[in-house]
Amino acid sequence: MTDFTEFHDELRSVAGDLLAKDRNLEWPTLIDAGWVGLEVPEQFGGAGASFAEVAVICEEIGRAAGDTHFLGSAVLAAAALNAVRPSDTRDNLLTELANGATRMTVALEPHDFVPDAEGADRVLIVTDRGIAVTAQQATPRPVVDETRSLAAVSPDTAGAELLPFADDTAVPRLRDRAAVAIACDSLGLSEAMLTATVGYVKVRQQFGRAIGSFQAVKHACADMLVSISVSRQLVGAAVQAVAEDAPDAGVAVSMAKSYACAAAVDIAGKAMQLHGGIGYTWESGIHVYLKRATLNRSLFGSPSAHRQELAKRYQ
Image (cartoon, rainbow, N blue to C red; front, side):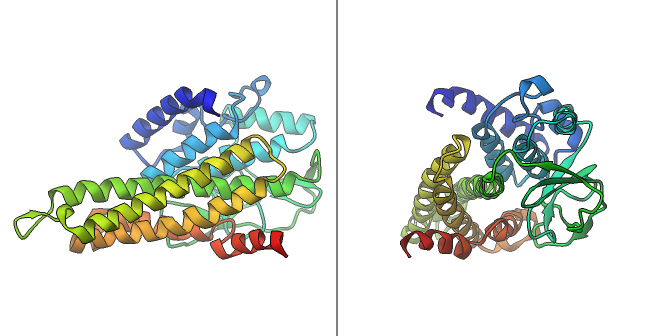
């Protein structure tokens, strides 16, 4: 991953600029940016990139609290299709995903909260044996975070074409990928909250001086920075493990997901507190990040669930 640092920095900059103009990116914009086919092999019209590049985009979307269909399509659908055995159907779906002709999402259990399922052309339902390709309608599920679209889909796969997995590790790998993508999102939003808070406490005056000069405020910001630094180390290790398909990737994933997503809720809460009364207003926008962090904490495994997985290593 170190060899691609410069490329990742450029990708991060381009993504940040695009999301700064409009954080609610429509599907055609994602196609034009080339994001939907990042992990689609080049022979099918994709970029042939790795999960490391996808993770950069996930982090920037979290930093902007972006409302996009990137998670369901580029992150999960491409990975799910890459995990099944070669076939004409698989190849056609990869081609359609890369050129944006078909918007897809993936239903991992439970099927009640599937990301980006509403309006998707295809829903790829994960089973023990493979992926069932369906075109079923999804029922929107209201959640606390209005920047994400979650919906319920039926687990019924009768009559659907089944694409068998290439090996028996596909499902755990898909779950790991989903969890790390959310951890990257939480890392990005945590950094956005620290930046916004530091900027605010430098200019907010109280008792004739900036509140950032007060010891309690300094300590709170320092705590936020420490948490983010730990999150970055853990998330970086998890991204590398998933990108390299490491045998023990699940360990790094659980560590990153449990810590980064829990820390993001605390950091967003501190940001709201340090913004004072204005932090509780609709105009401040802090609530958007707090709600997103709260949903991220529970998506694809809560911190306690991932810690239980880690604890099994010592039983």
